[in-house]
Structure formats: structure tokens, C-alpha cells
Image (tube, rainbow, N blue to C red; front, side, top):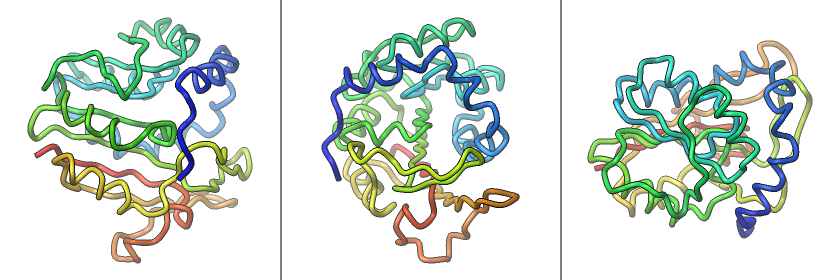
Length: 221
């Protein structure tokens, strides 16, 4: 895997497109919501939820509307956080490698939008384990090297970290006291319905690149 970019470089890249980010992504919203449904399911019924890479707050807004008592999002992009704040969301500028929260502060952590591709997975998982309560959920969305959406095929930036196998992340997580609750693999298609879920029995060790996108739900022991 390639070395992660610095948080300042990531922040600068997202600051540029923050103002019209939601507008540019509105076309594929229904498909995106279907992909992210397992993330929201992991947060359902949890009193305190943290989102890593909150961006403009699209996912966090749905968590709040679902009745979560405490919902906080972090991001390194000040401009994206400003957009999220307009939605009256609680957001903090912070680095996922150094979370500014006390131990056992959250019941669930969501990492949508492929945010782990910008992180050094080991230290980030250490922090997630620290701030989660025992039994807490960590739900991670990960892109493959090439994905397809209604806007067309898109190859991931070669400078970001990609997972060769789902097992690569779950193995790192297991060393931090996490167990796997659920893995949902998605295959993107250039024709309707544009997305299919791949059954778990079909080669669980297949590369993420084959599936296109994957949601991994972990439980803190």
C-alpha cells in the first residue's frame, strides 16, 4: 500500500471543492445511500456516535435524524466542516490518528467515504479502539482501486492507501481487539441497477478491487 498523504495535503484537496460538494454528488445519492445502509445500521440504537471524515455531514445528518443523542464528526478540511456546521451538526477539526476524546467516549464509530484510504490503518484503529466502549461498533467503508458510478468509471488516486483484501484490514483490527460482525461487498455496474451485493459465500478473500466497494462492520471486544 502507498504511504498516506499528510493531513494538510488531504485537507487542501477537499477545501477546494467543499462549497459545491453536495451539489456535485446529488445525482448518485440513492445509490450511495444503499451502499452506506450498513454504516447507518451499525449506528442505529447507539447513544453516542463519532464519524471519521465527516465531510459536509451527509451521513452524520442521517445519524442525527435517526435519534442518536450525541453525534460528532471530525475532519481535517476546514471548508468541509464549515459546510457541515451550516447543517447544525457538531463537528471538530481533528486528525483520526489523534482523536481529541477520552477513552470509552463512543458507542459507535462510522468511517464512510473510504476515509481509511487516507489513514495509517494501525494507529487509526488504535484510536478507534481507545475511544470505543466494549461492545462498540466500528463500521468502515472502503473503495477498491477502480470504482464505477453513474458519473462514470473512476480510478482511485494512486497516492492513497488501498486494501488488497478485506482480510488485510480485519487482521489489523483483530490485533486491536476487534471482531468481525459483518462484511458487505458491493459490485458496481455501468447499467441499472448500477449496484449488486455479492453474497458472503462467494470467495470472501477476493480482492476489494473485484467488488468495487465494501463495508466492514467490527465490534470492540
